[in-house]
Length: 619
View 1 (cartoon, rainbow, N blue to C red):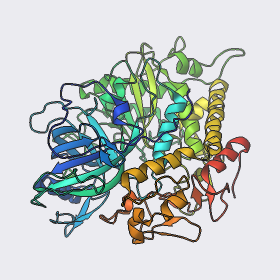
View 2: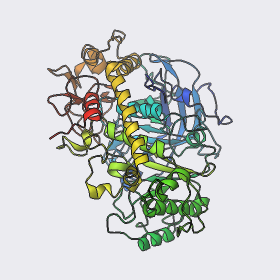
View 3: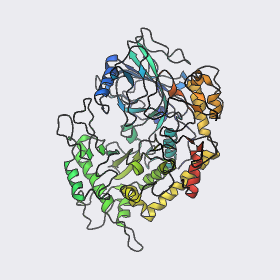
């Protein structure tokens, strides 16, 4: 367990064609270089108008589609203080698609709704993207610092560009590396500056970086500034798996928030499902269900997601299998056996003894005579990494991560490490944390995160529908691990407060040095109000933002996470200690001395610090 990294990963890519490194023959993972904590790399995607319009028209046909288009070239340029520094990485013919659930938006609106592209400065929006580096023409493998894929995420309308970065980096510090692995279960994450260059929009390559005129688009392309993004290590990538586990050839299931019988690893607690129904669902599950040209039963909760461009056979199972299709049946059997043991092994322990559920969680063994219909010989022997899971759940409560497994049955993966026979719980999204709300009218519950530390504010009936946490917390050994984790998290929050939120000041200064609009910008201030409001050149000369009477930056047209961010207005570059995208307008992260739900502002860390110590309840 290490202390906070006083960091904020900042990275990614760009520059023109020209000489650069190729990673086609070098798959070794260099996460610390890709997710550098001291710079904001730039990235440029070169796309033909034909391919770009495919992306737009496919969105019109099926917004959830997972169809990739080809990008002619991808360039990753390391940066120092807004200027190119070091050799760019250049990958030809990579693949690109949109990603996200509620955050999935059209990247360029037009007369058809989404598109078509308009030559010149189109109506662009900060969409989320997934990159796959495999050459779309030759099929050759390509890597960026050892990664075969990468996620590029917008900040969902949050002017504070810190919540998800802070959360994943802090969780990584708390968890520490996986035993025998290189990194923690928390995926790497950082910041980036994204440009998309569309062919045919300019006969002479334009200089796109006001701080470095040498950075120019290739002739025949125009670089559109998509602004400030974060980049994230996909948890289903070989790069992620190979740096945590003995191999990437285990079995991964991703959980999605869906109202189906077995959501939340649940079998029978809601009263609407039973063992027979569960067996039938497992029996029906297959790798081919809803595949192109195959029969489709979208009600089956276990399977492989299929979202074609035209929506035919569209299928998003509650549990989306992420690993090799040829191993689907074996992975399904393992998962079914895990669910059965979790729900049906007794949590009652003999006097002075250990319950069957606790024994199975700890070492993977079941009692003599135990009958699991999916593992009749009790040979599987997978144990559960309960320490990391319970620490993650404690952390989710502290940061108010309501869109997680515990509260919303969402944004998690289970990885069955077949080499070590351990099941790991992996969080994969923290973009609605530290004060965001599931309801704009709510002032309690998940905004606090710690109102009821052992139930996350869920009613008893809903708590029973989360057996992976509720059954473990009913056993003293695991409840003690959870409480200990809460104590360690409080110490880190205490440090954040005592440090006067220094990591946020450092992030502001780094952003200022990389994005300042003029050479006169003051990048030395540690006070976010002074820093932003005293530098109107950083906020487009005040045209799109202003400082209110309290000294806080305000953006009248940016109110929710699904709002588009018009370019070239530059709102995506603005950084301020402002509320999150779902309301909670009173919450700040590194200003205000109030806590709880006090108006007009309250500090989330002070609130959590108080809650973890006393169990604060709001009205």
